[in-house]
Length: 485
Image (cartoon, rainbow, N blue to C red; front, side, top):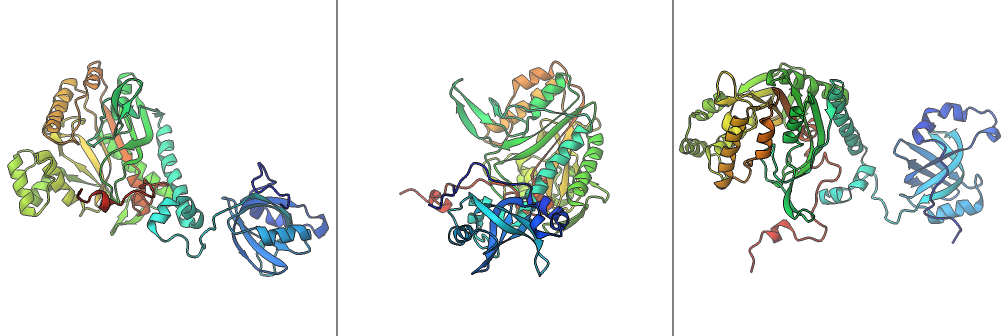
């Protein structure tokens, strides 16, 4: 009714708040106040204080925060009264005025005129209290980020984390590729996929469970020597502090290399991430103190399991593995009681105690259908996993490029699926066919955003911008899982 559009298409803005503060001395330096250049700033009002003839309003534009002074007599009576009666914390405004320093030394903008940039209809929570309820924080993530500078900094570091990785690879002449997200056969990992239906082709398809592993290796067949992808993957599995259902993953493949060269490369990459993103190699993560600049030790999978549980993972039977688990009090998933899953569960109990940084090596071939067998022991593969703070933070191996061996191992995985293990990999005849054309010896590696969440010492959900939530009015987990009447 005052004639001011509450949602204009564009407002005056001469510079960012950060630029205003950086050039503040020059902007304030004019000896004659009447000759000072008026500057237009725009941003959200984060706090307001004062009453009567003077109001202080702090505005934030994403680059910085500055105090503005709205004072009767410095702008028209109509504009002052409209500000008092119609402007609230949370509103976006454009304010035009001159730079000045208050008696308390605060760099400020003395407002001469203002206009609404976008009217807020919901009151922001107090900056002091913020959002405390976890559900509310995730559901209104935009408000949580707005009020929490530490959280905002987390996502700035997240961007730098992925761009550090990207730059590291591009500097070594890798090319970035994009591979299919929708697949007729999900492959490249042991995981339960999401399934949907493709209407145009009238086929069931899956969301990918790896960042294009089998596709990228087809590109090695095609003659590309170094490829990588940073992309979203999807796994229809449980949720925990370390596990999400959709998350970002890096995978890369380098021809004419092996996992020994790969370990050196990954150690260098992780140290670069630490120094470029965090400025340190030392971290406290979930009760472990870790220095990525320390020597990275190696842990032999079969040796440590035999020392801990008294069984050899290479020769033990299903029954012996189950007995070892029972004696150790380790609960096994009843849906897949085969040796591979039991041994892997036993290993995960040991893993929780290891600080790292370290490389896990010597993994049995039956646990890794895509890695090349060791030249000295065909029962194990040339695979390593990065161990940090009791968890696995990346996996790499000398890639299996023998088509007959690959077909045989896919068949073993398919037999496990047929026996009830829905995380075992599927037979992929098209990929085997590609290998029959010849793939060079190669090293491949993958790591997910779990590494970022660990370096932040946060849960993976807390380190995601918008973690998946139930619809606001959906039944609770307990209601959904209660017996049907």
